[in-house]
Every structure is written in structure tokens, then in C-alpha cells.
Amino acid sequence: MSPAPATAEEIRDVNTRYHDGAADGYDAKWGIDFGEIGRTQVLGKLRKALGGDLRHFGGSLEIGAGTGYFSLNLLQAGVVGEATCTDIAPGMVARCEANAQRLGLDVTARVADAEALPFPDESFDLVLGHAVLHHLPDLDQAWSEFRRVLRPGGVAVFAGEPSRHGDRIANVPKRLAARLAPAWRAALRARPADEGHQDGGAENHQLESMVDVHAFDPGALGAAPRAAGFEDVRVRGEELLANWFGWANRGLEATADPETVPMAWKLYAYHGYVGLQQVDRVLLEPRLPPAIFYNLMVSARKPA
Image 1: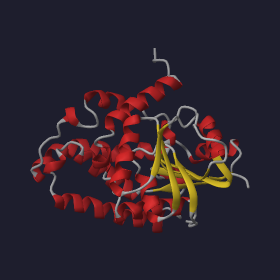
Image 2 (image 1 turned 135 degrees about the vertical axis):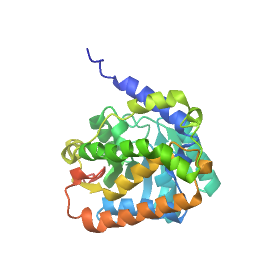
Image 3 (image 1 turned 180 degrees about the vertical axis):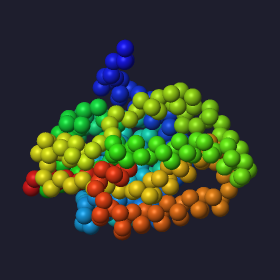
Image 4 (image 1 turned 30 degrees about the vertical axis):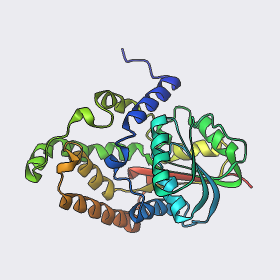
């Protein structure tokens, strides 16, 4: 007999506990950068999601902001004037505030549930998020909230959402990395990772498989904003070759103590990933159906 599906409250609780535990090591694990590299990545994703329209937004609200990767880089680039960052995990909100203070940026950071946002109607020009929709138990309610807090003509943009087909494809490099990891560590003379100190420890590793609720097909990803009353809904695919390359490398690196991974490897992994992103963007993304890519992005506009 299969177990009963998790309730919405259980999903929220698991996501809160998991992301609290992961907060302190999150930036290092995912290579989050608040310099030129990070701004280039964030601006590229936003420009792509908006079809090249990268205008200035007066006030932005980020859902599932984590440690502030998108909002803080957009503030530094001058794309948004005022940024509000929300996350369901207090630990992530605290890390976001610390990053903003270190960078000398003024942000509003609050613990909030995406399905019950604590903001008045028509408060923001941009609602955005990265790799967050697949954690939300009630997408219809969330999109209703996004529409409520947007001003007329405001835009919602979400990137980094796993596609159903692409997620299955990504399992291939992940499994390959797991098999090659011992030989890879030996070749690089890297020590095995201390599993007790990764992502909040053993408890977080047990929670990791429970935090992802959805993998999307493009039609379903676009259906929720349309049902909520948004216009100009567009869904795009992103990263195929870069995804294979990135997941293989992340799978290897996750098994090693990061302090013992040579800088030469890190440079190879970064430059290889960026180079394949360009191949995907120029050659593959305009020609292949969105469903085949690992990441999906969706943009939508509230009627004026």
C-alpha cells in the first residue's frame, strides 16, 4: 500500500525545516555570486524570460528569495529600485539580510508564505522567483496572490523550474557522477565530504527528497497564471547541454570536501558551464521544444 500524499501543511513544514538547515552553506554549495558573474547570470535569465525587454521596475517582490541571489543582483544592476525578499524559511531570510548588509544594499526581507502574502493589493511592479514554484503545494492560490499584489500592467517572472522530461534526463549525469566519484576524488586528491556537515546534516539529507512537489510540462506551467487572469503568458526552455555538464560536475563535487577540490577544476567547471550555456542559448533554445530542457521559465503580465 503506497503512503498517503503529503498535505499542504506537511509540504510547507518540510520546506521550512530543509531550507533553514541549508541556509548557512547555501551560497557556497550553489556557487552564488554577487559580483559581475552573478549579475551577468541573473540579468541574462530575466532578459530571456521577458523576451529581451529589460526595463526598470520600481518595486519588486521575490518569492522564495533564499539568500537574495536574484534580488540583490538586480538591485546592484539598477534594474529594480526597491526590493522586497520573502522566504518561508527564517534561516534564509536571515542570510539574505546579512548578504544585503555586507553589500551595502537596502532591502525588506520577511518570512512569508507565497500562498498568503502579507502585502496590500497592487504593491509591486515585478513579482519574481527562481527555482521556487516547484516547492509550492497550491500553485493556483499562489498565482492568485501574485496577481493581487501586482500593480496593473505589472509582470511576474519565474525561472529555474524543472521540466518533467528534463528532470528525467538529468538523472543520467547524476547517476554517472555517483559511479565515477571515487576515481575522480583520487585523481584530484580530494578528500571525501563530511556528510554530517553538508546542507544542515543528516536530517536535511533525509528531507531533501520531500521538498520538491512538482516537475512541469510547459502547458501546465502556463496554465496557472492564465487561470489567475494573467495575459501575455510565455513559457521558455533553458539549458540542455549546460545542464548535463553542470549536474555531472555538481554530482562529483558534492562527494568531496570543497576545500580540497583544486582551483583548476573549479575554473574548468565554471567556464565549461558558461560556454555550454551560450551554445544552448544560441543554437538549441530557439529551435527545440521547451519540454526537452531541464529548466523552464514563465513570464506573465497583469492586465493594465
